Structures are given as structure tokens and as C-alpha cells.
Image 1 (tube, one colour):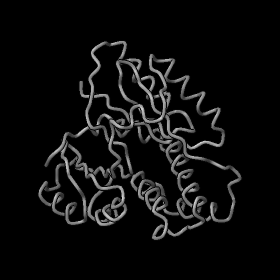
Image 2 (tube, helix red, strand yellow):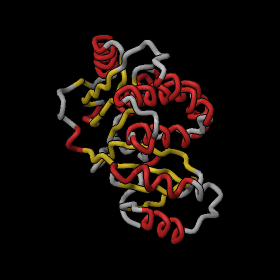
Image 3 (cartoon, helix red, strand yellow):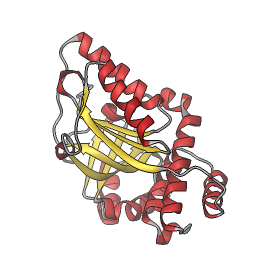
Image 4 (cartoon, helix red, strand yellow):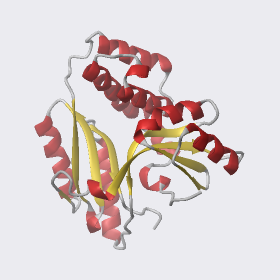
Length: 244
């Protein structure tokens, strides 16, 4: 298996994820609503963004009934809010590259909040494209292997046969990487065989940086927490090597 696994750089511990499950469901529901409203199509077979959002919802254990109701709500115009996708880029403490993906009904409010978070913890918000060139857009599926029961060879064979580009193992998880256009296909093929901890389109860093100053590490942690607590922020990606 190739590549360098950075699962711990992106995700919190399982207990932390569980504690924020309600907020996660709300954010995923927003993604589903926007995916449906952008196209007017509620069938994931004919709506790639919706299919991707549903894969993410299932990986986060969002009940099927919730997914179905959210789609019906979007098709019926039940949500009066009009959201748009916005991406912000910038630098955190020590020059860490940060990408913030948001969905907002008030671009000015969200931009102000994101800029404030960067500034508060020693970072700065940059212009579009200032750090995105340091990342690759990939489908990323995280398979649970906490019990160590899965065969590395079996997971790799199943993933590659489904169309994955690469598989990386890191202790208790397998990370499956796909072309974004094949993400839904690969996720669908693996869903019935393995337990997903995460499944979504992500911005994957090409390289990672370390922080050596305790103050920078503390501020970076606080910055990420504040971004994640922001209702408008859907995803945050960075190239900080948290293993240090």
C-alpha cells in the first residue's frame, strides 16, 4: 500500500465525533438540500452531488428516514433558506495551509466569521487559490479496522476492483482514495462489505508541515475547533502534521 496516511490529521476521536453528531447531521442535511435544489433532481442516480452527500450521510450513521425526509423537503420547497457554496483559503499558525468550505445564506456574515477566526489565532485569510494548489481533490473512504479483523490484501483487492486509485493502512483504519468522479461508484461497491467511518470528497494535502512551537499548536487546535463549531462551515482541510 502506498501513500502516507493522515487520518488523524483530519478527524477527531470517535467520542468527539459522536458528541457532535447532531451538528454533523444538520450540516449534512444542508448539503443534501443544496444538492437537490441546485438541480431539482432528488434521485442520486442522476445527481452526483446528492449521491456524494448521501454517501457522507450514511458514513456518519444518519438514519435513512432522515435522508429521505430531507430530500422530500428540498423537492417540495420546504426549506425557505437559500444557501450557496463558498470556499475560503488562508494560513494558520506557522504557515499551515487551511481550506474552509461553507454553505451560507449570508455571504458577508460567513466571510466575516471566517476572517475573524483566522485572525484570532494568528493566521490570516488569503485570496482564492492561495493554498488550494497544495491539495488534491479526492474521494476518501475511511474503513474501520479497530478490531484488526480485516485482511489488508482483501481490502485492497476489493477497493481496486471497485475502481479506487489507492489504499493506505494506518493502524485501525484503511483509507481508500478515488477519483472524485468514481467516488460514488467505489463507495457503493464497498458499503455492504465494510464499516465506513467517513466517506466524502475531500481536499487531500500533497505535503504536510509540522508545528514546533507549543503556542502555535495550541492556537491551531483552537482555530480548528472554532471553525468546526461554526454552523456555516461544512468542512475544514489543512496540511498540519498532527502526529507531532
